[in-house]
Each structure stands twice: as structure tokens, then as C-alpha cells.
Length: 222
Image 1: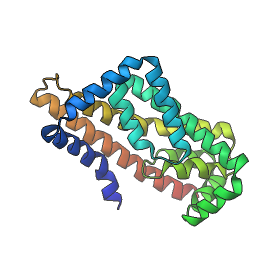
Image 2: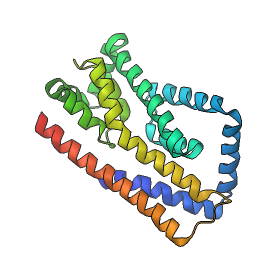
Image 3: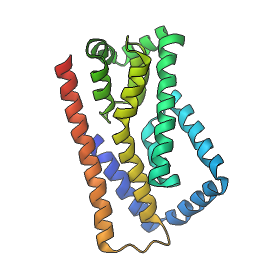
Image 4: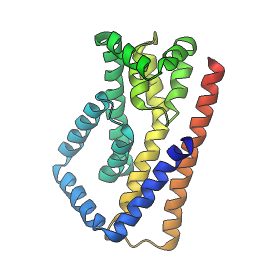
């Protein structure tokens, strides 16, 4: 199961390349980007609101981060994803803590997620940060689960900002790389493709290392 999770980003990237070869993906992508560009700042604002709202309903952040890279590029895409993801996570946190504590406690118990609540109560900020560094733990489990702990809100927000940055950057990078590769007007040489593929592999490898390290350190801390 863990190997499958590691291979998902690579498989998705390869699928994009295959789709580009057999489908007019490049044309669709160019049309979508032009449409969003035509909205200007409103396009960013709409994406920000959609991202934040979907985070509240436990929608996976991975496709949203990839979409940010595709639509807005690496720099703007990462900034928008970080801001929207952090706000959405904090809203989940305060929802679980103040507005629907008992309901979320039952949901966490039903999926055997109580361990993350106990781990944070014992290890505090360090465990929250390590959990954030693990890309294979569902964001919704961390967002709502942390709200059931005794951790201070500012510590949650700080751990979120620091811990999710490398993971978000990786997925935004994958989206941006895919968009560059599929650009109908781009004339990429062999070495450029090699560099892009190498960047993807390095990103996935770093995510795997972070997941292994965070899991081990959480176990040691608790």
C-alpha cells in the first residue's frame, strides 16, 4: 500500500504524458489557462475560495495543489495553495474544537484515528510538525484531528505553515512541470525532458523520505 502511494504522483505524471500523445490535452490546457488568465486576480480569488471550501469538506489537497501549479505557475501557484490550504486547515481546526467537537471525535474514532490525537497530546508541537511532513496522512485527519487535542491554535497554524510547505511545493511543481511539458508551443529537447523527469523523481523521493522520517520520529516521541 505504501509503495502504491509513493508511485501515484509518478503514475499521474506518466498518464499526463500519454494523454498528451493520444488526446488534445495540450489544447484543452491552453484554453483553460487562457480562460483563467482572462479573469486576472479574480481567477486567483475564485480558486482560493474553492480550495478553502473543498478543504472544509475533506477534499484531498493533492489535486488542488497540482491544479494550482498548472493554472498559475510555480511561484503564484505555491503562494495561493499555501494561503488557501492554511486557511482551510485552520477553519477545520476551529470547527472540530469549538463547533462540532463531539461529532468529529466520533468520526475520528470510527476510522481508528484516535492515535493521532493521543500522539499530539503527548508530544505537542513537534508531533504536529512531523505529522504535517508526512504526505501520506490524509490532510482532513490532521486538520480535524488536531482540533480535538489540547494544542494551542497558534502552534497548529505554525506547524501547518512549516510542515505542509515542502509537500505543497512538490505537488505544485508537478503541476507546473506537467503544464510546461504539455504546452503546445513548447519545444523541449531531450535534456530538458530528462531534467523535468529527474525533478519529478527527486520530489517524490523527498516526500517518501519525509514520510518515513516523520513516522519514525512520531513513534519515538510518543
